[in-house]
Amino acid sequence: MPDVIKAYVRIVDATNQKVGQFAMYLVVVMLIVLFYSTISKNFFDPSLWTLEVAQFIMVAYYLLGGGYTLQNGSHVRMDLVYGGWSPKTKAAVDCFTILFLIFYLGILLRGGISSTTYALEYGERGRSIWRPYMAPIKIIACIGILLMLAQAVAELFKDIARLRGVEIGIRPAEDEIRKEQGEESSQ
Image (cartoon, rainbow, N blue to C red; front, side, top):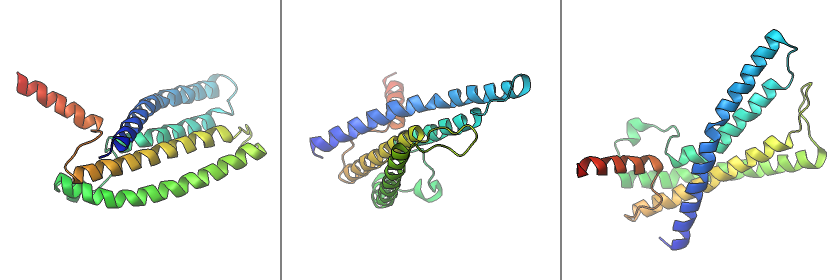
């Protein structure tokens, strides 16, 4: 594989790993917001913003963590059939199916950019009584979709390399297993 593709895969993997690890902490932030919501409803005046902020945090969590999940191979698939295949057969099937994901994410990103542009131009606000500006969450959604799209392309490159008998950008989970196996065999 050309060095440019290897560099692309390394950069995308590293970026999605950092962003994904950051996104994991958003669940804690969401829980704090929901805990505050519960306390404020019972002891103070109820807050109007907490439910929507929790929803926005959950959207950011899912979309910013999507590329990391794809990188780790943690998305749902039919392991009943897929699990028994050889690595080359898996790579060949993944090369075909990832094209559908890339197409879908491309359309999703196009719509997201259009919606974000509208939100920025017209100062779009939510329809609730709190009426938050929608542009920040739409920008985060577009970033998350872009990261997933970049990771999907990186996964395609990894699968093509696998079909050629070369490994590039080993998934972090596989890297950890190999380290553990290396430690066991050296003892």
